[in-house]
Image (cartoon, rainbow, N blue to C red; front, side, top):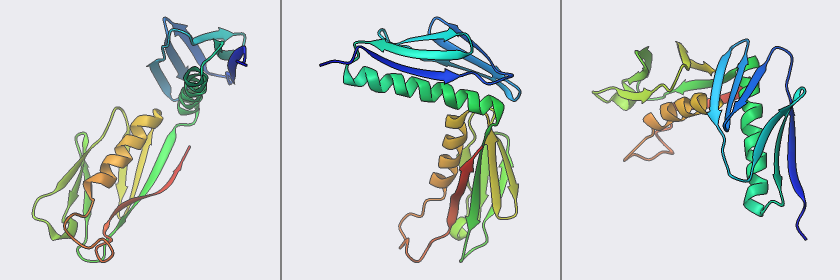
Length: 178
């Protein structure tokens, strides 16, 4: 037997404005503004009073999952414009001292395993990257761009052609949060 509805409700906190226009959700808050297209022919997103309602009638398994996914994206957008997202990373080295700097929209990693040329990682969107000695802080309002920037930095310093049990040098995520 099919369930008649899949419904998720999201409370809109004080100080946050949300607009829904042709499947484009716009969220504006104290830290900034985010916009994202969330569309599916059978899933509807509507604003009622101080709530956002994501629903689907007679959902199939994939549509029921999509209702939860859309609700999670909207919650992340609200959290981003109110609190923001912060990832903390740690520079670890045993063999050669790694020098990390930010230039334009790239993170430059010098002297990784004694290599002659620097490794580079792209910074996405309006994400801010701060480097102080062996700590890197990545901040922004879009969770996906902050996470992708951290992943780019981790991937840039992946050890290749060496025993990773011996060469544990790199830059690692130590904490994620708001």
